[in-house]
Image 1 (cartoon, one colour):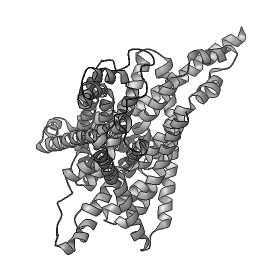
Image 2 (tube, helix red, strand yellow):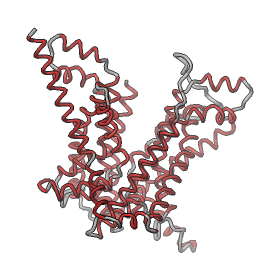
Image 3 (cartoon, rainbow, N blue to C red):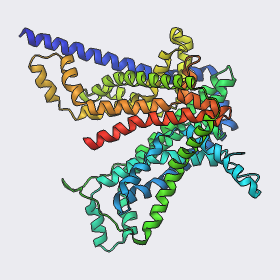
Image 4 (cartoon, one colour):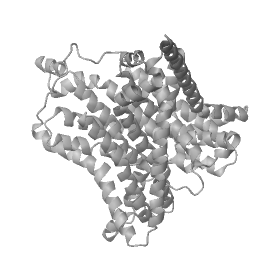
Length: 530
């Protein structure tokens, strides 16, 4: 009897600790919202003048135009590739499926600097064509350059979700369409494409938010979206009120994208009519379309992966002829690994209570905690950085301009990724397993550490790898919140390209891509093994 009473007390204490940790994390995630509200109230009546000024409207239209264009362009690239690598007899389908997803590891600012070094003014291509009398190439800066870079590097988001939808789709639906006399094209537009709507909406959401958050590509391409304008205003003005109001508009725009995705997703059912309906997908013979399909896939891989990699190697070899500061390179790599590693562990620990409460507890408070954690997904890095600067300078001076404040910025920015991975794993663990362990006399902490965590470890490791990958590439938060003199591979690339030192930027960019590829490779290998 005493053992049961002690166990009940331990469970109550454990739950209270979990609830306290979840509430503390929710307050941390709400810091950017508090910051924006405080700054907006400081503006008084002038807030309306800033919101509805011609400058704000121009920036808003530019941002929406770029996000919409990149999302549509990415879909036009991703959907044909997904269909070819899942539904057709394209030669080396798995090979193309792997190569077309690899651009995800290339940060946008790296891709932008590489394209500028070749296609920009006085770039490599212009020098090669100068003997032929070509003195000037069409300008790459502005919308065209930002659209090109962001589309080539973000289409894999739609590709991965669309491929997953195609592989889970019931092939009987397409067979029935063909039996009714519809051809391949009619079947695709009438049956296949409508079934891909959830995958397209999910991938399109990721692309749109990626563009809204992007800072590196639009900065290098000199295209003024909200993130670039915010950074310029932050660097050049002591009054941050205007920057905060623009950041508020950016958050509202991101939330609008989330609402559009929810509406687009709809309430229709997309599962098969009976268990086992999903089988091997029909393989369509391409016939004489085989060679155009191969050319299409090759062109996309060439522009999005092979060309940037080749340019990067060229600049690296060229830079090695000049004396390069390798000690600073290794220091930047060390700082990147340390900050990414610490952030992965810190964010994982913070995500555990939120994910556990969202799965094991019911009620409005648990739902609120989960939604608050996911709402951070709509926060651009620039907004998070500005909020943390305000918080650190006014309320947390001991950690201002230290690694601790940088880790808190990473926490707010990337917690949704860890929560999503952990929540999926916790959902697959039956509560009866934990309950059986408690009836044997084990305390809740012992059950959690010896049963829950080991079973959920695949999702935990995937979450760690995903957070590590994204933190390694993060630029605006690291630029603004990093301690004085704290250089990472991302900031090293930024500094070198800002000074037009393409050779000096090649080594940290290549090392950044290689290090970022490791967690992605581990995640893919684990998926194949499991």
